[in-house]
Length: 141
Ligand SMILES: [Zn+2]
Image (cartoon, rainbow, N blue to C red; front, side, top):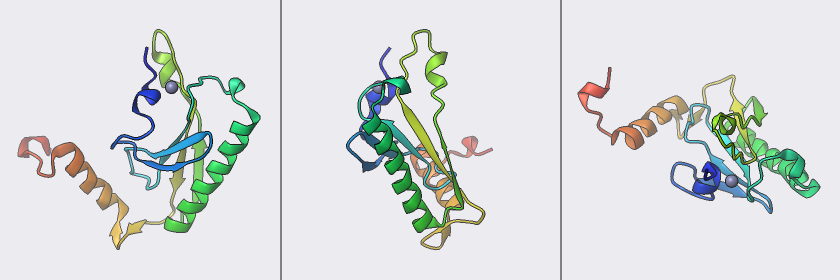
């Protein structure tokens, strides 16, 4: 099985690269219903945290701190849910996980970008990217 993360990393339109360190890449997740939701993945293919180096771990901590600081500054994120599951890879017959984690900002307020509520931007982005801007009447139910 080809590792899905290695197949789209480092940069495809659905996962735009927003930050890079010596060991990690940070991309925006396609689902931006929580504005700034990111995926942090190791640059090299590795599926077991026990096989990562001390330098990679420390760089991951610095990376999380940078992303959280930026999201807090830009959108006043209330708190963050960093997580690392990798469960999906183990649903495959021959699992080939790639270490990655999610940074999910949470908000206790409506986030606006250029005065527009982020939920409206998410809907507009979805309509543009998934429906070709103008949805056929049949698909809007
Ligand atoms: Zn990989």
